[in-house]
Length: 157
Image (cartoon, rainbow, N blue to C red; front, side):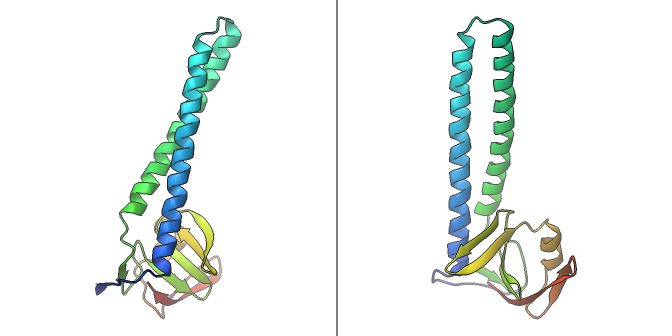
């Protein structure tokens, strides 16, 4: 496998930076929600309303557990994304590749959905996704099909 580095900021770098910013914002938002829930829990412990108080406190604890689980998942995604070096280009599809197909750009990284960067429609998808699995290891000129839709690889960044 031939790997080389590019020094100029390309579309791939912009896409990487965009998704990294999105995930950082989501992490910060969830951390704020957890802080707010913790404060609400502190206020609930001061109440003496009996059963109503116990129910409210239990609901807060469930909500905190849900938000902590979401935060844990986001942090795992952030860590996976941060392991990608966006300036490395491989000759075949690997984790971190920006794949130009006949159906648009696919950023093989983490499942973060669709965005538009510099007028290009990009979908960030996990290498573990069904399409990601079929694309891994392919080279320009090769193709993968899923749900009767063919993705022909035009280039890899």
